[in-house]
Image (cartoon, rainbow, N blue to C red; front, side):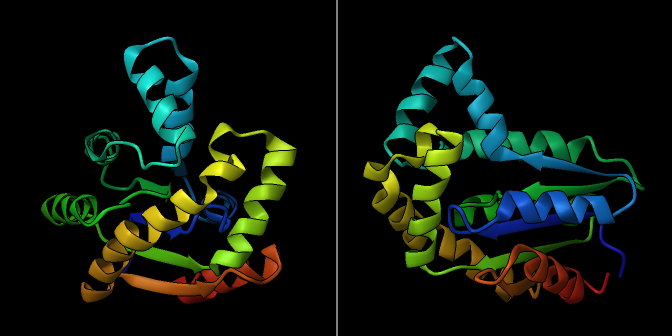
Length: 190
């Protein structure tokens, strides 16, 4: 079955953005949507939403589900019949996953979720390194535990949901980037 929508999921710093970008390069005419980048651009603005989102992200909290849902809905509603979209993250809580699935079903958009599996210890190491290189506010050492906890208590429910729908593929993310990419392509049959 040809898929129109791809979602890359994983813990913080699991390589979602990298793998989403690499995957989008392999799929003709695919556009990439990064919820994290969308939210960080809101933070950079001087709006009330941006200011509150900054507080949440710096505390290691997930952004409000309504904001993530709105962002995903906006993208899904704009997809043409032959368009392809790669989401760098998304569906972080079960409600978002259920809504995403419902919209894709209603629109007749086949989708697949690729979960990049990386241990808590490895993502902690990666976040600390990324903070040194990129200086992202949401990578503060003080918020690492909260971000991992948010993932473990909320996002794992989304992963279980997609697994129950037979739309989840799992890749070992604790390998060199190129090997992870090869495995992503392999599980997708690309």
